[in-house]
Amino acid sequence: MKPTNTKALVEGALLAAINIVLSIMALYMPILGSFATLVWPVPIVILGIRHGLRTSILATAVAGIIVAILSGPFQALSIVISFGLIGIAMGGAINKKLSPFKVLAVGGAASLISKVILIFLTMLMMGINPITEEINIMKESLLMAGSLYEKFGMDPQTVETTIDSFNRSLELLPILIPGIFIMASVMDTLLTYVVTKAVLARMGQKLEDLTPFWLWKFPDFTVAFFLLGYLLVLLETYWPVGVLKAVGMNISLVFGFAFYIEGFSLLAYFLGKYNVAKPLRVLITFFALFNPLFLQLMFFAGLFDILFNFRKIY
Image (cartoon, rainbow, N blue to C red):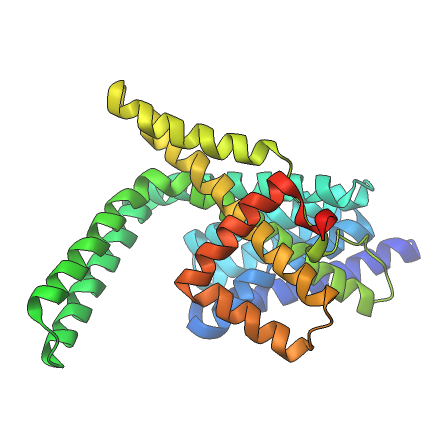
């Protein structure tokens, strides 16, 4: 056996073992499991980069088979489809020397496809709609929270009004699933790239840098698509064909999400430009992220930055 083949075999076995451990954590350790699912694709990406597509596919299959033996076929399929496809796709794209943007595009597409497959697989094998089930769980949690607040002395009318408001929001959730899946796929892929880059740096291998976050800039047509989404929602009122509102809401959701990203990129740029201390930068960003008023400011800051490019003006 050639030394290169031996090295690929050893690394493949080691990283497949890591994936098996991550799978067990994801299935049986709720808190650590959340972290495990986020980094699951990383070993597969590394194998694809260092040893090619075939090795990454083989390691994913081996990990899936062992998880199926330990936990059952549905759990194994769920994990492999959810995260294995992203790892295989991104590893293959980086191995082919594609640009970071194209790598993210390939990974995002794989992530989106995996989510759609998983929904249909769950419906086929379990006979349930996971989206409907999740909404029902949320509604039950709201009722439990409402009862708890009433016991603590909150006005029952206020509690009922609040629950009704949340329930109306939950009714929109199935309509917004495509947009939510797209945003989640982008975040999955971005996180996988960043973590993979950090791990490879430890292994003495460099991965091409992404554009620094404080320089991220979305094209002008982002605003046009956002407005198009709103226009479609309005058209549904006058031309009720049944799909315009759903399409429009998803378009507005995805491109509105881009405004938030641009807003925080702009915030990072100015915090860096004026040499704000790093702990204070974290505090300001955290505050902006979790304060509803400042979150809205980030939205409009991103919107107007796309149109006027404040980084050039100032």
